[in-house]
Image 1: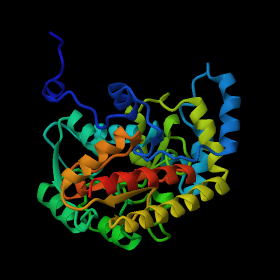
Image 2 (image 1 turned 45 degrees about the horizontal axis):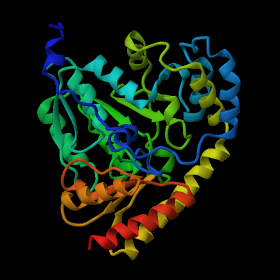
Image 3 (image 1 turned 30 degrees about the vertical axis):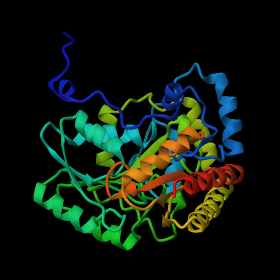
Image 4 (image 1 turned 45 degrees about the vertical axis):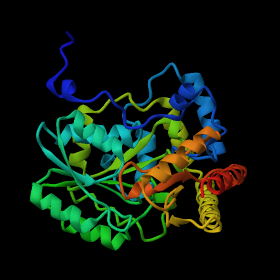
Length: 365
């Protein structure tokens, strides 16, 4: 008998996401449109690509465990001290480290019902208990999250702004009011993976004097480096020191660090991606309208298309799209699951999706 811990023995054999590769292996067919994982369809910055290609020659070396150069550049970029920034293999790894730092078995953690499931996955792995709050009007309900925090005396709460899976967002003023109202001993993990796509006035000012807030950002979306696995957290120096006590110090590889640094210096590339994504969101909205459907306003690189009715219609649509070679996803809980979620692809991918989606909708009226 394998001597698993009590926590591991009690967990189901599951993963947060089934990847498109797994679906392809099961079906025996390759997707022609990969629009389900919110990856960037626009590649990486040419400067990043060149830097990473040059770094391959030193791939036999470990990456800088301090990530010194990138952290220094990020400090200038966000207006913080470099000792208030820590790198990780994407926000997913940073979430895991944060949960390990703060959660012990039996502790209650607050999040929104249907929000990013990888956070829940990490909480479960530590034996934490999730207290979930339903969305309100397709947005995370800030007031109800606060009520839940005070009722449960939780040490940790999760909020994504903009949100995944709906793409909705709260203005900076509302988020700051939420932060100001946090209990003294509660830490907010503010997931800002999609912040580059959001309107001005979405992100509150960064205040690392507030020990209750950990901001997390990534190079996976606007910078197109999802496969390189690199993200960062911004927080009070004392919190960052906590990360360094237990993080994987060689978890961010040399090539990723070099590429992220080059991409950070190529503001024009990221700006171009954001502008093209905005055009794509508008195209999806017009497509849905032409088909008698609607979309949820989005501040991300994806759009939630409301299929109407309950989740059964969305699941049926998702299945047919997969059979047609289109990989998309959908939210996992009602009433969010009335939608399918489609990543904004390149213009040619958007055109192909429009043709296939139109055919699918027309056949299933």
